Image (cartoon, rainbow, N blue to C red; front, side, top):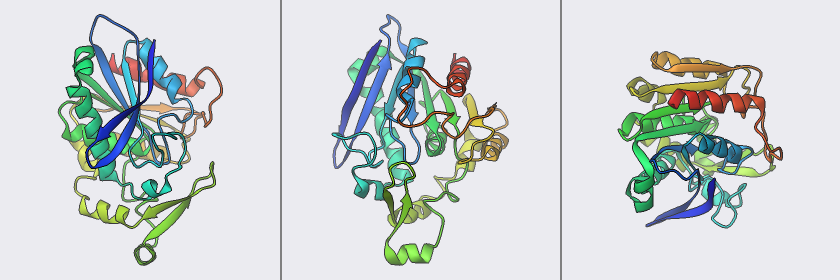
Length: 279
C-alpha cells in the first residue's frame, strides 16, 4: 500500500491545504474517495488513517485533508495550534477548500492518470456531512454521496446559534474543546457569512436536489447529532439509503488518540456498508 502523508496544496491568496493519500498500486484507474472531517476535527483524528487503509485495500484511492481554517497548520496538523484561523473559519471557506481539492485531483497529471473521474465519492463526517451534501448537489463531478453522522441543518448548530447581540457586540464567542480544554473562538464573521450565503447553505434544499446514489449512515444513540437528523435527511431524499448503526456514539466508538491497530466493530461495520454501497 502506498501512503502519502501531509502533502501541501498551495493556493494563491489563501491558506494551504494539507492532505493525505492512501491507495494500492493498480494497472486500472481507481475510484476516488474524498473524506471531509467535521467540526473540531482533522484528517489525522482517531481512526481515520485505519479507515483510509480499509478503503485502499478494497481498491479505492482515499484522500483526506484538513480544511484550511480548521485550526491546524502545515507544521502541526494535529489539534489546534492556530486558533486565529479556527475563529475565521466558515462554511463557505470549507466549500471552497473542497472545491480546490477536487480541482486539484481533476487537473494534476498524476491524479488524472490514476483515478477514474467517473467515480468520485464524497464522504463527510458530522459537519463535513453537511458540506459534502451541498457540494454533491452543485457539482456534477460527484458520482456518490455518503454522510457519516451528518448534520441536517447549519442554522441550528453551535456556531450560528446563541446570543447574537452579545456575539455581535463582542465580536467573538468561545466554545470549549472538551478534549484539549482550549477556548475555541468563533468570530462574528461566521454568522455574517452564513446569513449572506443562507440560500446556498440550506442542506434541505441541497438534499432534495441529490440524484446520485446517497447513503446516510448514523448511530441510533449518537448524543452529538441525533439520529432524527439522519431521518430528516432521508425524508428529504427518499431515494437515499438510510443505514442505522446500533449502540455507537458520534464517532462510532472510537476516540482520539486511537492506539488500537484495528477499527471498532461499529466503525468496521460502517466502512463495510459504505464499500458495499459504492461497489
